[in-house]
Image (tube, rainbow, N blue to C red; front, side, top):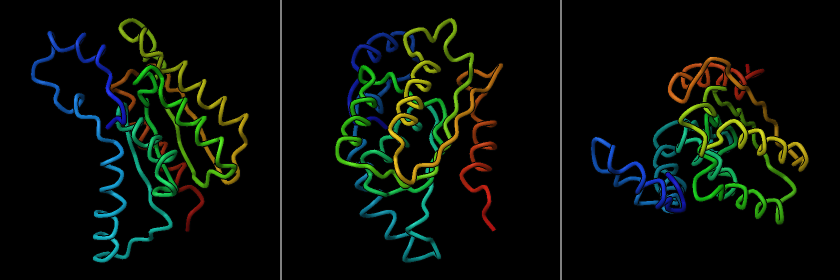
Length: 182
């Protein structure tokens, strides 16, 4: 789920894609975040013993992008996140603009976040996406910003690619974002 469109990517992959790609043409991240906050969360919290001050999100690839998006644009919608192989390249690396905008008006970033990527995600076939380089750039920015309340950890999985990194990301990510809880 992305806030912007990436027409160049859509046009490049369409001829070889086995089915239409309508979800990539839709954008809609702001609307989806609104739906979560205004419709889904209240429904869940009314029916179940859910704690609105301790929500978590997991996302991989485009979902990892949305996880970051929801942290920067969600006004506290989530307090924990597992961000796996985020598609930071999307929209000509638009996520870095979102972070910059967030930093201009926020000193605090109350969240516990686990970032990961497979080291094979920057090899042959992944050159344009710069998955590893972009995640390193983002975590370097977060390190410099020293946001109040932000706890984070990054992990670069050797011998893992965009598909195989999902399981180790979930396992290690859950242990990190919920580590130390009774």
